[in-house]
Length: 67
Ligand code: FES
Image (cartoon, rainbow, N blue to C red; front, side):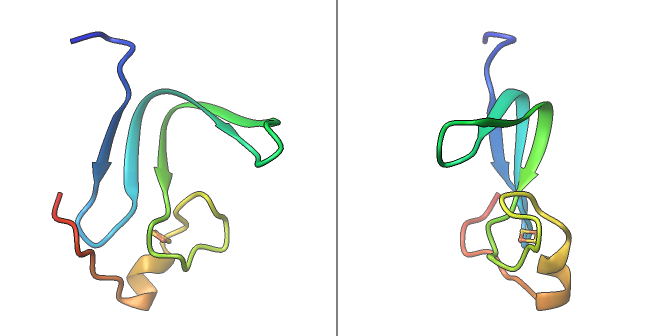
């Protein structure tokens, strides 16, 4: 397995955990962040999309895809 591989794991009742060197782009292609790991919202409640801000806990998000 390559060390450069990015792994995406849906956390139970939480965000997508993205581990590996990633670049997040805006819709116009502009780089907005580079990181070795990020947590992406999949509940729709985050006030800092595309990132998880913990709002899934307050909103009682229940994932339908098991990790
Ligand atoms: S998954 Fe955490 S705020 Fe949406």
